[in-house]
Image (tube, rainbow, N blue to C red; front, side, top):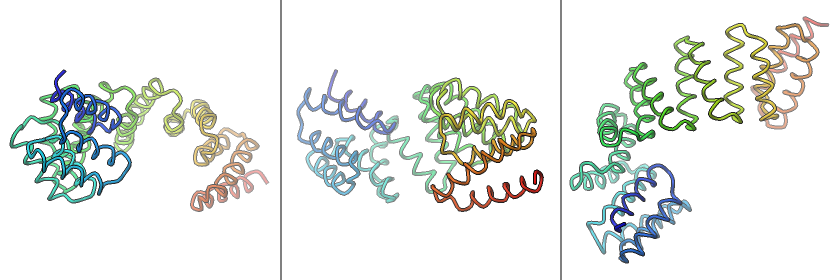
Length: 295
């Protein structure tokens, strides 16, 4: 494998957030074809991984001083500028890369992020659509496309994009949760329930999924199912005071006042420990309500 192909693969890993994989690939590239510029790019990446942005920028500058055509260093610098909120400098670096290679996927993706950040969803849409045309199986692009569609007010397209991202990356939790949230906003509770059930199948240890599905089951009148889900969520995350309050409320609804009281007091204790003042006030109000119903 050539150094160039290893560098490009490393860039792909970079904008997917897989920094360790990028390091491995770029180290291989430096071994295949030793170049001082690649060494500086490696230094920049190591600094980025360790959140030393200024050091990373210095290393990128050194790489570009040795080889102004090294696109990896320019993309990495553009990404750093994006991270640092220096949009104009980031756009300039990415434009220079895309002028040489308009199909450079990492540059297109970072530019799309910048357009979103700058409040230009139409421009982001164009970039993401081009990325997807070049790499239709890239889940990250579909996921971000969903948020761009949502910003443009196209909810069906947003749901379709997140659904595609979910299918391409079945363990991507946010693709499921965003679908479920939007479906709930549209009062499509059963559809949201189905999405959360798919998430639980993919991630059976995710407490949040059980808690959210429990809330939907409660809203749909399925107290038994809601209690099962809340209980499983609390088994996975016993300190979740919000879910414990929800289980208390559901227990009260089915006449289990003793269980509701126990849950509510435990939730209150957890809130005090976690300094959740707002939630604690809600729990206290619920406990007072329980006392009025069951003096």
